[in-house]
Length: 111
Length: 112
Image 1 (cartoon, rainbow over the protein chains, first blue to last red):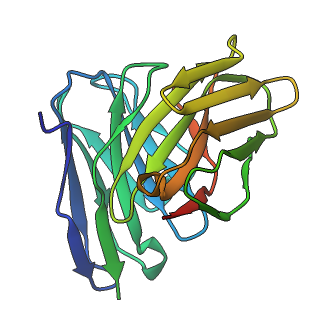
Image 2: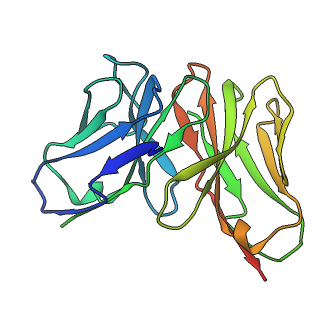
Image 3: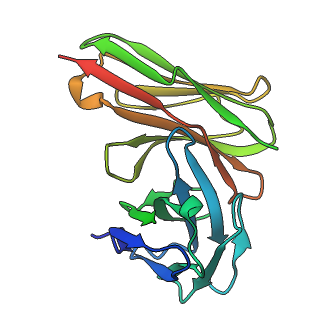
C-alpha cells in the first residue's frame, strides 16, 4: 500500500526555471493538499483541493499553481522559480475532517 | 489570523520519563486538532485527532487533551522510549474542514 507518492524526491533548479511536482494517492481520498516546510516554521498550506475539480488557496499561494488532474493526482507547478521557494514540499490527502496522510516530501533547491 | 505555538522547541529526556508537549492556538473556532510525528527526512504520521467537541484522545502510551476555550492542547507521552525521538507537530483545522495551520514543532530526544 503506497499511500501518498511524491515525485521527484530531490530537485535543483536555477532561478527562473519552471517545474511541476507530482503527487498521487491510492487511498481514494477526496481531498488533497500541498504544503511547504521551512526550518523553524512548521508546515504552511499552499493550496488544497477539497474534491476532484476544485482547488483553493491556502496560506502561501503566491508563485504557485496547482492542478487536480483526477481523484488520485494533484500537481504543484512553479512557473518561474525563485530562491525564496527553496523548501521541502509535502503532499497530503484525507477525507474531510479526518487525519491527513503525508508523502515523504520533495526537497527543492533553487539557485 | 490563526497562530499555533508549540513549547518547548526542543526537549531531551532520559528513557522511561513521562513528558508533556504543549500546543496553543489563538482562534478557538476550530473543527479539530491533530498531533503528528515527523522523523528526519520523512513525512508526517498522524498520531491523534481530537474533535473540537472532545476533551481528550488516547492511543497506547499517548494521550492528547484539548481545551478549546483556552486555546490549548497537550500531548502526554508515558514511559518514553528512544524510539519516540522525533519532531512532534500539532495542527488545527478550521471549521471549513480543510485549512490547516501547523505549529513549528517540538523536537524530542529520548536518551537510552
